[in-house]
Image 1 (cartoon, rainbow, N blue to C red):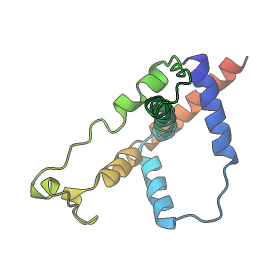
Image 2: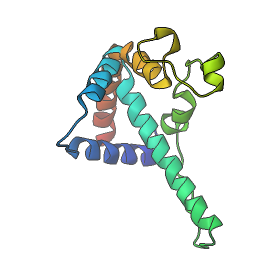
Image 3: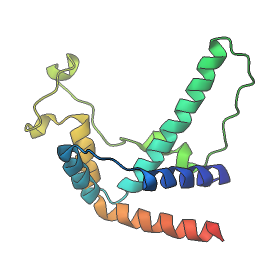
Length: 150
């Protein structure tokens, strides 16, 4: 993990810890909890994914400004390691694309049809199957934070 990635991750986690909400969708919360129970590395993957998307969004916004004629110097992309560099490459790996006539027309089967799960349902199922590794990853992340802090 680079120094940039570490600082960005700590900022992200600080924002996460201090985020509050008054209203939650209970169905979504239940599905998320199920997924977290089944995917041991879910917390790691979710932080990695969110930070990778944030990095990509920043690069896209800079490129849009450049293309729109804002001739301000472009911001160089920070150096990344396997933590953020691999985040986009592994997200959703192992998911099979939908097959058959429904996939061709963009239709989705009902949620109660296990043979035709949506990508979201497959993701929740994948995460929920690996909950133990998530907690191991969280522990390792905490240990890394302690080690790098000194």
